[in-house]
Image (cartoon, rainbow, N blue to C red; front, side):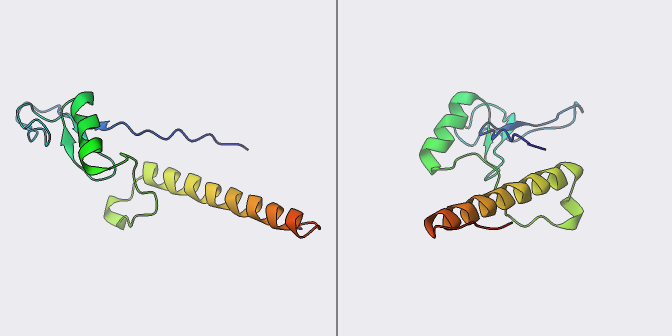
Amino acid sequence: SHHQLSHHSSHVAMDSKSPAFSLPSCSICRTAQSAYCCPRCSARTCSLQCCLEHKSRTGCNGKRDRAAFCSLARFTDAQLASDFHFLEDVLKCGERAGRFVGEKMGGSAGG
C-alpha cells in the first residue's frame, strides 16, 4: 500500500490543561508566553511570526530528525509509526536506486 507522508515544518502546540502549568517565554520575542515547540531543536515560540524568525535566524528547518536516537522511555506509538514510515521511505529509495543502476547498466535490476 502507498503511504503519503506529510512533512510539517510547523511547530507542535503544547498542551496546557492545568491552570498551574506555566510555559516559558518565547525564545524569539521574549515577551509572550510560548505556545509551540520546534520538533527539530525544541526552540519555544509564541506565533507563526516568531517561528519563521527562529528558522531565519538559526537555519533550522523545523522538521524532526527522523534518524535521531529516541530512548525506550520516550518511545511512543507515534514514534513507532514515524519510524515505520521512515523505513518504508528508505526501502523505496533503495528500490529506485536499484532500478536506476539496472537501467544504466542496460539490464534488469532484479527483484
